[in-house]
Length: 261
Image 1 (cartoon, rainbow, N blue to C red):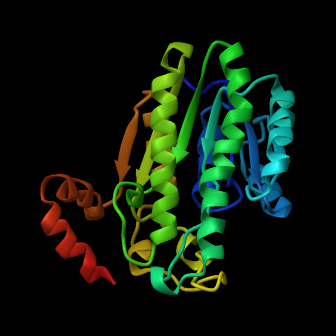
Image 2 (cartoon, one colour; image 1 turned 120 degrees about the horizontal axis):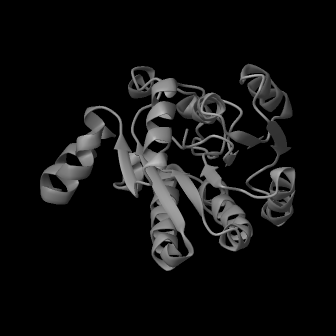
């Protein structure tokens, strides 16, 4: 019953993880605001949620930072406040650092990092005024360690950790909690849609993604951990152990990771 009538805003809700988060929050009785670029996909997700769920669609583009504060105001007007903000929108990368255009680096940061930061800063005053709120951040295991072919993606996720760890510390007394979700492989189109060195779509899947966690399972785990207000969680298969190998055996980790090119 934790999510009953809670107002949840999900970015990147049109496909993959975000889509299944919408279904899970709907089943849990939340009121939803779902956002992404593609209106038709958001309509599809809305129609697939429980009929009783109160859902509002808010189309947005995380790269258009000048528009995001106004989008946040629109989101708050739907139900009067935001209880849980789930930052899921983002894009990945599959290219060698030395070959990758600087424009790709900037685009990854603009979408994955600055887009989330901009929305958060717009929503925080309302959360504080209402006595608190929760922020969930979709990071990655590459937010804990760098990996070949993902330099800009890893950088954007590392940046999220720095920002939201600080936010958690600064706003603890304002009853703002932050859950950072570090996921490994999940069966979505993230690799297919990832950018290559020239900014085009990768259009290929990874074997790890193909054999990854079911997004339905991910969504259930995420809801459980957010309700417990966990600060940081790791999801995935054996790839999770990379976090611990890097921490306790850094030289071994370096040998392992450099062979992933």
